Length: 140
Picture 1 (tube, rainbow, N blue to C red):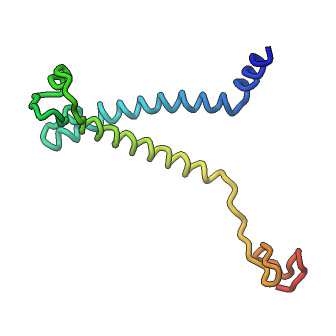
Picture 2 (picture 1 turned 90 degrees about the vertical axis):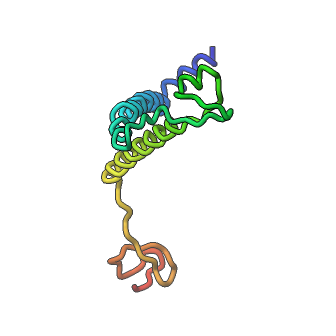
Picture 3 (picture 1 turned 120 degrees about the horizontal axis):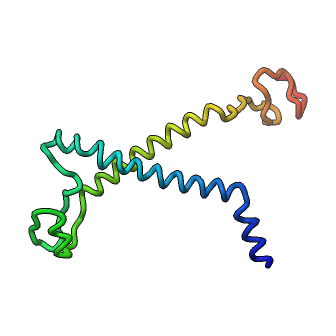
């Protein structure tokens, strides 16, 4: 019985629930970004670069030639999927930029560090406008 109670208490903690919500929202956001990259951003970029479909860029590792990725996969050929890797890099850059913007905007609400100077006698931190050290009572 104590294991069930301990598990219930663990799950009921706020930080565990917050983490679970964050993971779920993060996974959903990842799907949205992946769709944005694969379905919205990469097709026009491929068009501008000469009608390239990034998802079809691959290098077969067995030395054979395949007309497309489906054919290579059907032959169970080992392939390096360069286009898929490029899509994932763009995914990462977008997610990293959004996280940067969120952290940057949240930093405005965080308390700013208080500026201090060191006492020349005892080296304790004191306010910049102080004329006497509160620790050693030295005149500044």
